[in-house]
Image (cartoon, rainbow, N blue to C red; front, side, top):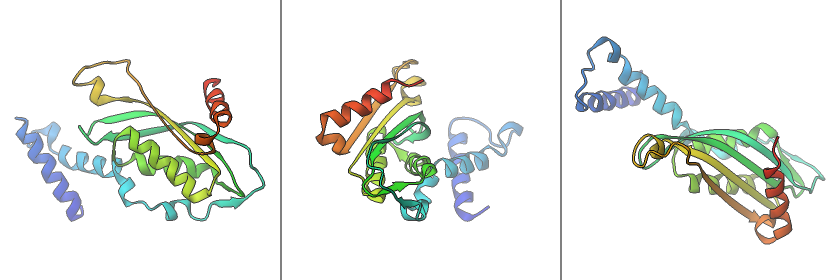
Length: 189
């Protein structure tokens, strides 16, 4: 274990003991280390860089019509309670001479989702990243997610879902472009 993993595991041990549990009992002996590893994985977006992630997977193309990628799964952690929020991200963009490799959209979503987040900021960060790497005429991102901080604690509303959207460029300027995107999104299989 690296020092940072050791340190993080020690903090988890303190938290578990602070809750009145005994970290020396069989079921909890390895929990601090496992929890530390899990948290490092769930927040590994901090160790990623957009340029390295995209890795030159931007290709010349004459395509200038809307490209849409739907239902990209996302798992993130609420920065207020450090509880998960889980959902889907839908992305559309209007290329302007360059298209992005398909898998890179999911990788961009993961990079920003695997940080302590609020959904509103996550939506904007994804949209701005795609605009930045593609130079697109427009980018639209919609995220719909369920938040454990609202389902497991507080108001305990099990069926609540939050939707956020960010429209950049043509999606913001043109009502017709925005409407086309939203209609395509609403006619899912």
